[in-house]
Length: 244
Image (cartoon, rainbow, N blue to C red; front, side, top):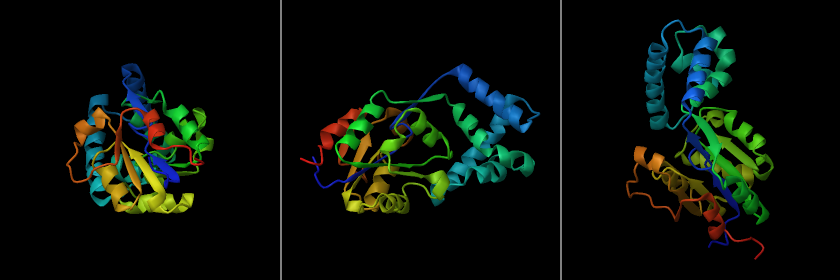
């Protein structure tokens, strides 16, 4: 246990929330997206084209550790062949539908109770997440009743930089008012999350063992977390009440 940690930052995708496959939900999202932009080709043709552009964007994003705002994502990267005046006003909705094609995103069963208890124990809480949407995480926090427990929310889509750039971690620490050495981070990526947390000089890194993430980006052994957990509530074994 570490009694020097004052602030705990958490990732969201595959950490606090997971994707549940729902073919009907995904199909409806894809159809609505095509209807919104007025696509004329078949669904297969349209999404094959956008998927190719998406992969090209992700390569740039991950290499340069930058994130486009939603409007630029759609008008410059994913649908540059569509009229800007049609696409730009729809960017927020398009991003949500693009993500919904993967399935429903739901909180882990023990996420909310753990967040509340960590807050009760005296820790400042924040979020640092790589995400292309500016609204999905704030909307989830509001609907799940956890918004009030987080003092800082740093989203790559809003600040323009991505993990593992240490600046995004420093930005979060500055906003919450705690030195990096007294901050901890929980994330599921065994490479990016560990590397960024270490580079930023955070006092602790906790890795959420998520098979879906590890299958895509297996650990290299270059960066080792302080703890590995498989349930969100295991954070309570690491962080005791601060008044003790």
